[in-house]
Length: 291
Image 1 (cartoon, one colour):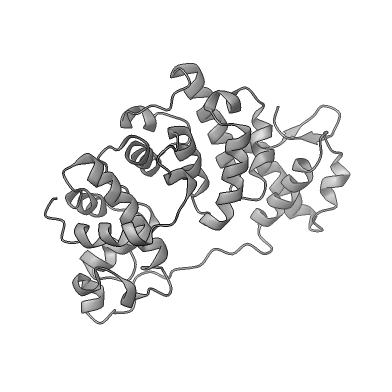
Image 2: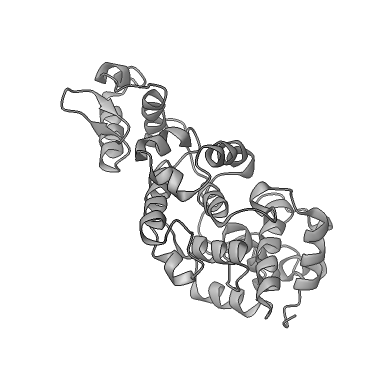
């Protein structure tokens, strides 16, 4: 172990409390782990589980997905939200198939070069799929470290270099243990050190947590605004995509017009979907998922 003052307690807690998730199984493939990480971005586990299972049943390897139209990925994405992730996963599958022999790369830098794979996802896949030693900083980890080490209720809105340096300084020296630490502290943030109602009485490091020891001072940074959905362009985009997903054939413009009364907002949302590559406008005036 390193000088990480939390690892022994957090790892022991994880052994007893970790959720039994299929992408954590010993036989989980690197591809299945990559799919889970993309799906879990801004989406809770309870919604991801059925989508992940359906996706892996249909496309168990990158080559299976790469062999189909990108629109099928959008259709299969269903209502997970942020559907551009489906296009990125499809592009990722194509790159893995064409440039890496169908095998998800195990090199961190190469992972970063894949479409739609950022710093967090590359570190997570390298760690969880290949047992490597990388600092993993998702929302949950950032919150746990902010409270335990920095003594504040919430981390900065945008990830800082100081957070990265802190996460790297806490990595156990053995790669396999570091990978386990990464998922363990993430799970602690998801189940115990939650954003709104942390259950400090159940936390294995409560006695060392700077925020708790300071009396859990209230957050005094910039206002934290929750994401809204009702009435937003995101909601309109979702309804428009639902019409296309539910149809085996291109749809007439009237079918899209029927889902939202505000003409200006509806057209803006449709234009955005076309611009993002999620919808194809056809020459005959109909619309379809991308071919």
